[in-house]
Length: 255
Image 1 (cartoon, rainbow, N blue to C red):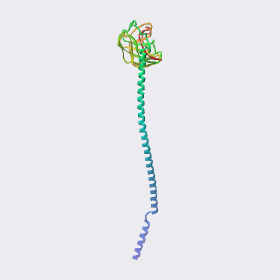
Image 2 (cartoon, rainbow, N blue to C red; image 1 turned 135 degrees about the vertical axis):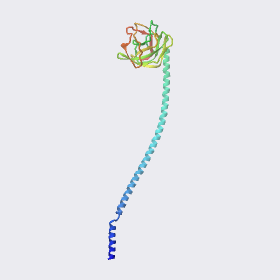
Image 3 (cartoon, rainbow, N blue to C red; image 1 turned 90 degrees about the vertical axis):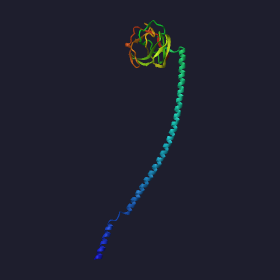
């Protein structure tokens, strides 16, 4: 009976051991093979991406090299063209200055204003004179002032453009100076463009710098000074009935 019990015990142990056997080895091997295959595919993709990245980097390096060359060439061309434009501008400016000087010396410039003669009246105080009788007959540039000065003095020149029944100051010169009496030309520091029907105004800073007659012109006047960009109502100007003509005007090149 004792041997029978031992045998029964061994048989029971083998039965239980058989019930607890590990998973199927073939299944595990198949999973491992699948994982190895996926790993190999992933590695191939990584290698392909690395190769593509290297190729793209080579293209980027080549494009950067070409860009550097083009930038260098462009810099040289820009520098050359800038120097050429500067030379052309200086040449043209010299020609303009020579032409302007020739026309001034030859008295060939256009003149717009009152006749430059000694007149019988002078103003007792500084005024802003607006020459309504001599608007610009055409577009062009004006380069200075001519006047028959009674005495030395300072003044500014303004270009006014008509807007309905008003005038707007579109340009004002720096302060100009007449150094002696008699007929003189005073150049602007820079020429200024004008349009047809623009009106010229003169702000004299001292009284009696230029003389005037009555009955032959249409120069209006005001005690007020007018700044660049301001509007002047024509009806606010005095002197319409006086019909004043002053010995002052501008000269330049008009179409």
